[in-house]
View 1 (cartoon, rainbow over the protein chains, first blue to last red):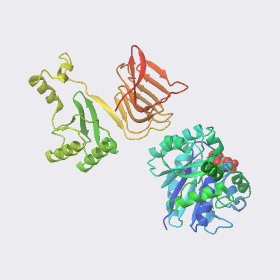
View 2: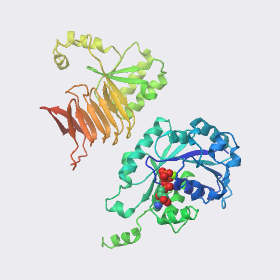
View 3: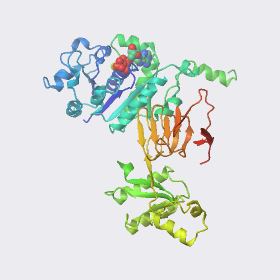
View 4: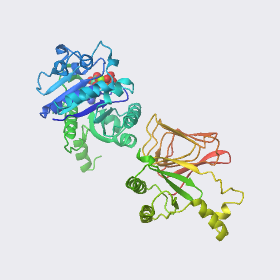
Length: 264
Length: 217
Ligand SMILES: Nc1ncnc2c1ncn2[C@@H]1O[C@H](COP(=O)(O)OP(=O)(O)OP(=O)(O)O)[C@@H](O)[C@H]1O
Ligand SMILES: [Mg+2]
């Protein structure tokens, strides 16, 4: 086994990095892959919460990089998916002690044990970002369809380029088709125009993302949720499948019929 | 970095290729192929290679490659050429252009900086030379050049040509939609309601004002 190490980044905060990391992680595990999620961010909604694992944490990333425990001891196994593990972030310890070299060393060590290692990165381009991206083979940039988020994504792509990360993929999260149609939100063409990197996900804004988060069960694979389906498509693209993008417009079926009858 | 293997200098007679001293011929060839396939060189521009810079066979190989793209590659010292033209064909237009008062000998070779990628937000280029960008200049990116700026892509950032006072500097882009254009000491701001064209445009100073006009290329 030799894991692909994927870092999930964004310029702007709150665009859905942690949500995306949790959903991709669970989705890969559903596809029988052995996955480790490393949380390098400390926010209010961390990976452990999204995965419903916060009450099982014993050790954290800082304990591992400072050599207090071997990583295997710090990994938290998911309740439902045997092959999904979380290496939680520290809520209290000084995270600046995790430097790029330490994380790279850890990733190299873990690499042989997993199929995928996903790293949830803090927003922005501070030290935490440099650390999170250091060992990654692939970077996923998450953005939202609004100008400020896209510009920040552009900056991050520039920074990733400076750090010699060539393999960069885009996920556009929280798309609201109606707003796009009214011209109040950027559409995919606008976004691709500026960012010009390969897009592997177009995820709609969906309240099921929030409700499932509260239950500690990511929405991925939930067929009743558009976001759940979109996230599973992201997972399949990561696995190398060629999956077409869904038409996110809810009424698209009727619209097409209407058009066929010359009503629209 | 691969961009530096072949440097292009803009000179009066055309373009002069300069190779990084430790580069292998394979790398040079690959670099030039790439630049050519990107439509880097304008057809008809003479390209010069100093005969001392490459073994004869290698130079000939390059010459053939350039020929395929409709470009004339001359393996000679461009300085010699201008003197030759002067003596033998004094009537030629280029020469009358290069008036006698222009010193050919110590001719200042204007350097061109080539950027083979999209400039993203937060990235900045600052140079005394002219700049050629093969890619876009995104919002939040900035170019400050002593010479002219040529963008083979969209320009959405801030561009300043002739930044050290050169009023003859121009800015060219396939789509010129910058947040701000500056040439020498003049500033033009993008209109708030843009009448966008799909055509390449050139900004230059005319009668003490920055004017923007469509061009063919
Ligand atoms: N597709 C979606 N539809 C609806 N809500 C979403 C979607 N994606 C994320 N959210 C919500 O947006 C909020 C921010 O998401 P998340 O915490 O994943 O962002 P983040 O980029 O990790 O933020 P931070 O920069 O603070 O780490 C959360 O409340 C989450 O539930
Ligand atoms: Mg987060």
